[in-house]
Image (cartoon, rainbow, N blue to C red; front, side, top):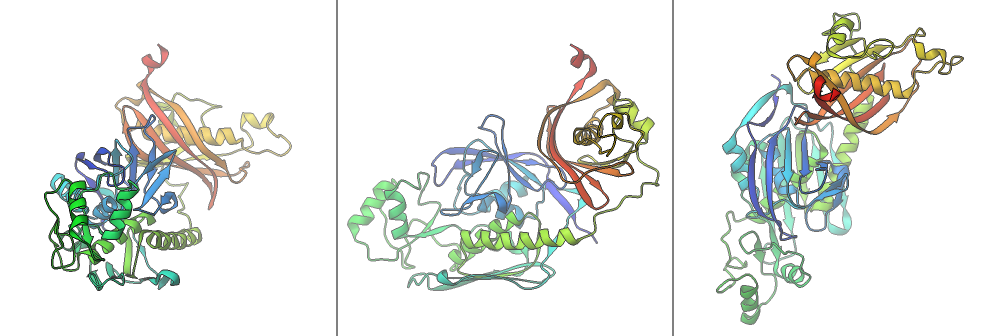
Length: 468
């Protein structure tokens, strides 16, 4: 039985402070369409740039995992992403009005709670897992980091930490299935050593730090004067060292809470692979830099395997969803400027159309008549018209609307198209349609070759509005 993709039933927000920036921030989880994945949107920046939760966008791992794209950055994404993986949410658009996710209590539990309360909804598309095919190793000998992903028809984690600390010692944590995340891992908070805390405070690097959102491990002799100084910094009446060798600001939720939090971080960082995984992940002494490097290794393998797979083929002789007459009922274009012949697939977030390229096209009379090549700008036009069908399908009486394209970005032409070729255009929404504006990713294929790709932004307007 295939597992369906899931998103949340309605938007829900949490507010807090960024650990490192100290800025107050509100984070809103929004439902997202199928195959959308996890994306962050910086609504405090003009144009509201979107940052894909992708390992290729990681820009820093020094004090948490930061991702950057389209001129914007989001810091400390790992706790949020761990919550989404742990709840098996597939598609979400996360709005932020600041540069960093809120630290909350230093764990994932408050993100888990608000998403659980709002509820999840199944979508039509199947969830596509990447099954670890064989043992994948990663190591950093100088840091004694060892990681391996092994085949398993589940998502299992085993983590060991050893910081050469008499307080922590060697700790292990594990879950046998991702379904255990909420109960066993989500509430486990971040931790740091006292000497690290002092360094961070000295350099003003944890402006949002609070003794309520971290376990502080006392790894050195400390006198009362230093404890009094820390109490003053954090606006506490007094601070002492608890018998477990940690500051008495909080009580441990689990004896091995630090190891469990490292496991939480690992789940969040590996979410940046971009697809849900099936396998057993084992790690010794993991950290954000190693997690990200390991995620990149897994993603590279996925990309390599995808390139080998046969591209989906379409039966061009089967009855289409829309033929040319149907298309002309939705689009205002007519020959010689109607650039699609059929619509083969159509959902709320996905459309597939096709164009048969023949030597009888009018433009071949003047465009390289001795060596006819389908012009790249007209390939984009065919993609645009295919995307227009997707957008117009969301409104009643589409013949009363026009689709006006606002932006075309990252257009690439990868292979020439000649008479006799049939281009298959595939367009997918990369963000929900808001205020009549849609953002899509489109590709054009001839056989198993990608010949053109681009990102498109379009707006639906009524005909009378467009004439005004």
